[in-house]
Amino acid sequence: MEQQSILSITARFGTQEACIKHLESIRWPDGPICTYCGSHHVHNRKNSNRHLCRECNSSFSVTVGTIMHASKLPLPKWFVAIFLIVNAKKGVSSLQLARDINVNKNTAWFMQKRIRDAMSGSGGLLKGIVEVDESYIGGSMTNMRKSYKKELGIYPGGMEHKRPVLGMMQREGNVKVIVIDKADAKTIRPLLNQYIDYNSEVVTDGFGAYRMLHKTHAKHIKLNHSKNIMTLGKYNTSRLDSFWTTIKRAIVGQYHRIDPENLQSYLDEIAFKFNNKGKNLFNILIYRVIQEKMKLPLSRKSPLKGTISVLGCTELAEI
Image 1: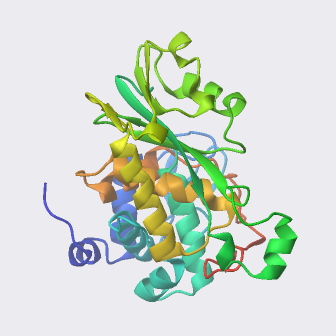
Image 2 (image 1 turned 180 degrees about the vertical axis):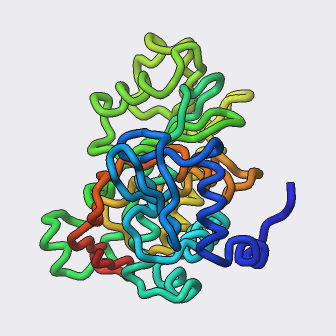
């Protein structure tokens, strides 16, 4: 596989026409198809990169229904942004991306949000040996201002001010990370049944929410961390523990603070990179963007309006 660099990406996809030609070769290998009615009776609009359907008389381009739909940004900037994001193991802040591709921070945040949407989701059940653990994402209470502590209505200590996250990692395989409302058996067990094959060997710590897993899965290996039992033969949760470290380093080192409403998309980005490490992430994401069309309204008006704010941090955008 040819090693890609920012220079090779800008050389290959430095013009709008080059980007459109590449996307069309992926989406329509046998010729353009109307994105609104599915008709093959279309023709190119003169002096334009758009097409006109003879059946429904709709004008459309290859980006309709994708994360680039209704965006006025040049496609070369989208391509460079995708390359920079997928090749940064711990992510890129919106301010850094804004500087790299010469846009304002609001536009950079808008692009990141859509690119993360394309990274979400992964198929198949986790099988074999599956490590399961929960973690908590959030800053220390000692670093919060007094007014914010009063607003939360909680006191220092414990995890009440943090968001619980459930992680499930297949040994030598993919990881699934899900933000949950509460780390209890009622919330966690249905997710384990949904995402882990019942023939799997599930490895957990001694947390009470994981009890009775031997009834729903082939084997439940419980490591008593309170007694410093971190491994039993081939069973441990070290790979998942390492993944938690990557997430927390990304938040501390790049994003600093994340709105709880957007936490899942940030986790999806990190999980996507982990699940596809060693592969050509740029090509994978471009194919996913154009083949697995996003669930956006097929309207000639922009589907995203309004204001999105990230509490007290640099990740602030008005879309």
